[in-house]
Length: 75
Image (cartoon, rainbow, N blue to C red; front, top):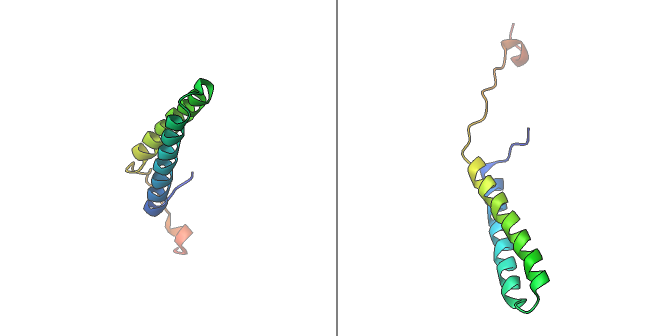
């Protein structure tokens, strides 16, 4: 299980938003190149869906973990 801290999630969220902005600018600059725009739009769509998935996982509770006393050094 890969667990990230809140700070790591916020950092990833910011990185995704920055990449999305960069792709939007690139798409606008490549107005005459349809193929390039199509490829960038696909990447933009993928990034947006990954960002939504990241936002959906931010506040999900984890499964409870039971730690027996023997694991804590108890008797």
